[in-house]
Amino acid sequence: MRASTSFTILLTGIATAREIPENVKRFYDSHINGECPKPISIRYDSGQGKSDTVYCKDDASGGVYLKDTGNGYADVDIDCDGLNAGEGDCFNDQTGQSQTAFKDSVQEFDIEDLDSHIHTYVVLGNDNSADEGDGGESFDPQSVGIKPLSVVAIVCNDKLLYGVWGDVNGGTLTGESSLSVGKLCFPDEEITGDSGHGDHDVLYIAFPGDEAVPGAAAAWSAGSPEEFEASLAGVGDALVAKLVSGGNSRIMKGKA
Image 1 (cartoon, rainbow, N blue to C red):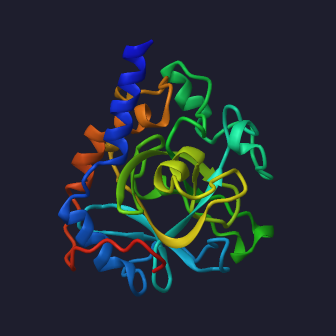
Image 2 (image 1 turned 90 degrees about the vertical axis):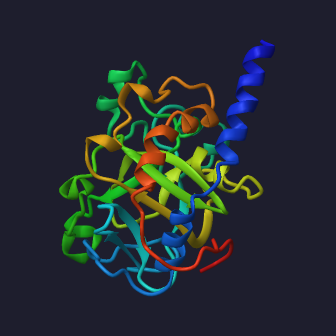
């Protein structure tokens, strides 16, 4: 039991103390202000302002990220879909679903579904039916090469974390991620199923191709968010090395 506890503590240190590479700092700062240079979607909603967020493509890396149409990136709204929806700090989630979009795919790894409490997943893509506005124009990340359950880099609160693309937005909202992402990013905030992080200072960036898919190498049966997140680092580190945009090297903690 002691060995298991020590291992969990070690993984916690890995997950929360990862140094942000200089190229990632430069990318973050050089893109946070102003509009997306290459939007690949219509404007969707952050929840704080209607039609204020687009999917933006970085040609140099092939990465796709959420970008506020003014200054900033995305917020953190909590998605509790999947296993144990409504349990623990997901008790007050008003929109939780009993399964995620890629439930069938993740079962290949001997788990029933993703668990928001354990798996650091990010919600990308918008189904956006006609009655939800914007003419019903949807956005599917697979249309630009992003694969389900591929690694997503998350820059938040002076940290670099890794998650996977694990769910899809049913309508026009953006910026959702699992409870475990919210808690790892902002441990000092009261993150629950109905309370996320509202500032648009979180960068989620996904990468195309098979090399972004961790497959069986990820710790899908992990017992903690730290263990799962750490298992994505090998793939994630190789992906973020592609970010080459210039700018200064100061990560902004507060509101953009």
